[in-house]
Image (tube, rainbow, N blue to C red; front, side, top):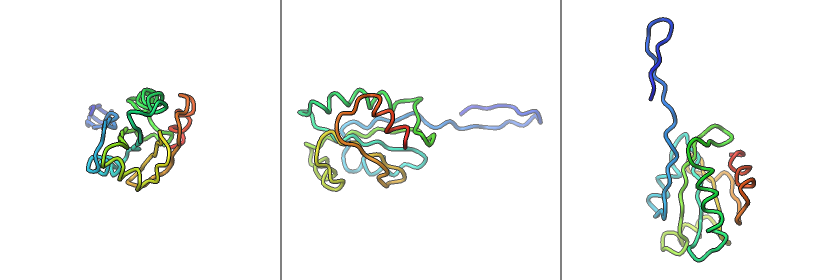
Length: 132
C-alpha cells in the first residue's frame, strides 16, 4: 500500500493488487480456495510429471502469470498447478473434463471462463492470457 498527499492536505491510500501467487501441486482444498479468489484470475495448469509437453509449457506459463503481468481485464493472475497423477488431481481432472495434458483452465470468481489444451508457444499463451 502506498500513501500520497493530495493538494487539499489529505492523505489518500491506494492498494495495489497483491503479487501473483503460485500454488505448486495443489490439493482439492487449495484449488477451491484459489479459484474462489475475488478480483483475480486463477490459471490452473493440469499436468503430470511424465508429460513432455507439460514440461515445455510450465516455465512459459509461470513466467507469463508472474508479477507484474495482468490479464486483458487488468486483473492479476494466480497460478495453480494440479498434478493429475495425485488422487486430488485425478478427481479435479474428472470434474473439469481434462482429457489431454497439459490442459489449462482460467477461473474468475470460482467459474471457468476459458481454457486451452496442449503446449502452446509463448505467443499463444500470451494471447490466451490477454483475452482473460
